[in-house]
Image (cartoon, rainbow, N blue to C red):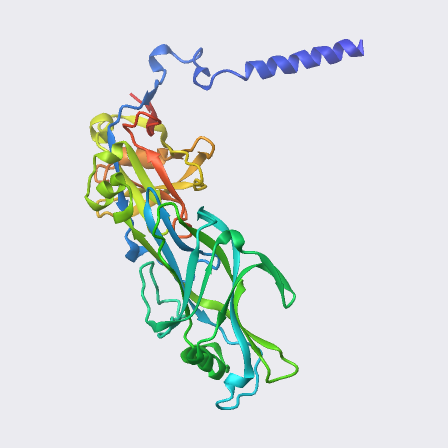
Length: 427
């Protein structure tokens, strides 16, 4: 008898679950009068066009942006040449040694610049990279209200103080002074720099930096398509100058960290990019982007999308927006990782952006990104003064990484981007 009761309970639970599994748009139809039923509609007919454009580098702040930047130079067969440099202050050491005037040559055994290396994002691991180190001739301000941007240039002494040629595939882990990590070690032998380093007043960082202003890391530009690389460095805890000396039997070396204030600088040469990119970003072509648009980080490229008939389709209609979305599809390219996320921004009448809409559906295997913005689209319809249907598409966190990607445009024969609106007619 107990078994029968249990079976009856199980069947009742199953019946309830099945009855709850109706299609959402059928719920309540049996009890609602036919003439009062609301009709949910799908619209994919809106006309729109897209094209790529240059990022305004004057608006991209790169001061103290990341302690793990990508540096180097890479000649992308599609996007052309990208070269990234790095300015940094040098912090005073907590260790000191007695200073005797004009004895630094005999006191210093060697000085080495150590740069911790974590990996490669884009490029050829077998390419020979040439890194040159220069000494800053002007101070980098540490004040919070002083901003530096991606195209900054600071004065440096006209001669390099050190250089190193290497390929990223040969960077090994080394155990030095008890620390083991992948690193590039660059000996510095320039006498003028060593003199300033030795004599810099260590009373505090500001005083020290007035004597020794910092370093500039510069990579030679890649000259052959597909060659070069953008390499990631750990410049927070694994980047420093180390001075080995003979002055004291107790302190064998002094460490000066690269930290405190730093500025990354980005340079893109789109005259070396493919013909389609040049047409869109250098010649102002707004048509070819309907086939393919391009996005690139590190103050490179972003793309604009314009919905041209929102007013004609949706104005003066009493509707509620259930869903509005844009889905884009990236071309999958061997050797190039897709960025984790994209972001869609609305553009107002003054050309300023607002309303960040991140891609909340991402499939990196197929290269699809979907951004939803029903509330924003509802506002577009309700407010006749809003700049209707102008959007900016870019890589999320594009100032922090040099991801690049190709996206099929709205008229592509491959995987055209899709703009969808699901709405309900209210009367």
